[in-house]
Structure formats: structure tokens, C-alpha cells
Length: 361
Image 1 (cartoon, one colour):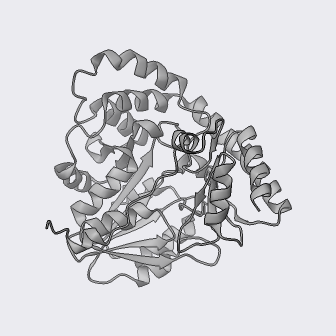
Image 2 (tube, rainbow, N blue to C red):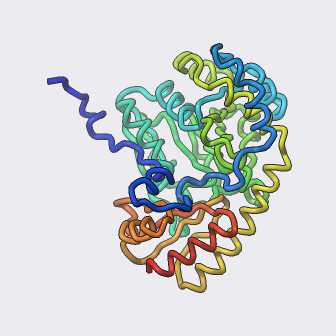
């Protein structure tokens, strides 16, 4: 019998949000609403769609393996060298590559709990030791406690800023104190997937400052959220060339597609689409805050396009009730038995969520 390594056998695979098509096929319903995966409800940038149409005739050719045009634009936008930019199939892939590049079997990767589950999975599947650190009482990453967990085996610390699933941020002051305590031989993965939604907060830190100070930091951003390109799987990282160089050695060839690269270039130029996405999100957030407060539901104020809330009831049971009404949200799992995460949608979708939630409760 084929033997699976124990560290692989112990991994619970990532479970994505349920697709609308699957739910409607299973239940024979239509007009479902998905608020489970933090997608942009406005859809992709029109400029990106136009660019995709222009390049469908070249799909018999392999993509640019180095994504030169996209990396050049990103390097220019951030004032860095092109060698300091790396692109991947979403930030998920870049997290995975970075951990495989810098964590050896038995090494430790520190992360918050709850936080983005991919940190845990990527560390575990590289035969490392994921070290989970509980959040503070106000649902924020506890950077000081994370520093306290550092040992001689620690190689990486993952910081989701804003944090997924709680939507809270690490502030400028938090990060300043963190770096005072951090040894200089540890890589910090600064995951800023929701950057566009959080950057207007005056307390939100500029991680590029840490990069320019020469810190061992990998800053990750994505086109999946505010840019609306989740289905194309494209994200990027900024780090010293020593870090990106090591990552490129184990990056799969042609890891980002032709259409994804061209769509990302166009989306970067469509600042109006991003501005509108952030605006619609703020309006939806205000509506949901008001309705959740009226229902007496505890929720965490978010710097993202989702809201984390505690129903004080079995979340999976509520989730299943909502599914039967065509509403897909995200229960947070065994560790958080009463909490859910809900994406902020368009006005009609937000209203449908509140309506179905009232009925499910």
C-alpha cells in the first residue's frame, strides 16, 4: 500500500466557499447569493475585460514566464527594481512558495489564530511546525505575543493585515514595537490582500517603509479582491531580490496565465473601478452594521470587504438554513462554533442576507 507521509496525512485541506452553481444544482433553486469568499460584487474592471478579449487569439502560446510587462508596471508603481517583484497565481501561491523557500522540515512558522488558513497548510505541508498565537480580546493580531513565541527554529512570521477572518488591522504603532523585538534572521510575510479597503485608515502602516529600511519582509497584494479578478488567480509580492530570487528558483514555470497578466495590467490602470468598489463596500458596511446592531448580533468592525460576527448559536446549523434559502456565507469551523464571516455585497445582496438571517435565527 502506498504510504502517505504523516505530516501530509495530518493536513485538513482548504475548503473554499460553496459555488453558486453547485448549490443551485443540489437544491434545484435559482437566484442564489454568494457572500462567502470576499469577492468584489461589482465584478472585474471593464478595462480588464476588454484586454482579455484582445488576447484570446494568442492562447496557443505559452505566457510570458517572467511576467515582464506586469512586473515592470508594478515596479514603477512602487518605486522598486523589477527583480524585487514576483507574481503568482494569487497570493496563496506566493505564500506557499515563500514558506517552501525559507522553512526547512522541523522549522517553525508563526501565525495568528484565527487567521488565513493557508499559512498553516503551507507550513504543515512543507513538514514544518505551524505555531498559532491567539488574537487579542478585540480580535487583533497580537504581535508582541507572536514575538514571545520565537525560538531558534522560527524562520517565518505571517501577518495578515487586515486579518482574515476578523477584518482588524495591525497599526503603525503595533508594527513599530514588533520590529523592535524581531530578530533580523526571520522573514515577515506581510499579507495585504485587503490593502485597498484599509489604506484610508490613518492608523494603517505603510509596509513599504519596512521594505526600504532593508527588513526581511515579503509584501503581498492581490488582484482578487478590490480589482475583481479572483477567477484569474493573480497576485504579486515585493521583497529584496535575495528573497524573490530564492522564490523564483522554486516557482513553477508559467505560473500565471497570459489572460491573467494582461487583465492585471489593465486593472491597475482602472483606478476609478477600484475607487467605486471601495465606495460601494463602505456603503454596504454601514448598512450591515446598522442592521446587525438592531438584531443584537455581536460583530467586529472591519477594515475589509467582509464582517466577522458571533451569532451565539451553532454557526453550521445557521449556515445550512441559509443555504436552503439560497444564501451562501462562511461558517468559521470547529474552533469558532458560533461565528460566521459574511462578504459585503451589493445593496440587494446585503438586504437579502439580513432578511434570510432573520428567518434562520
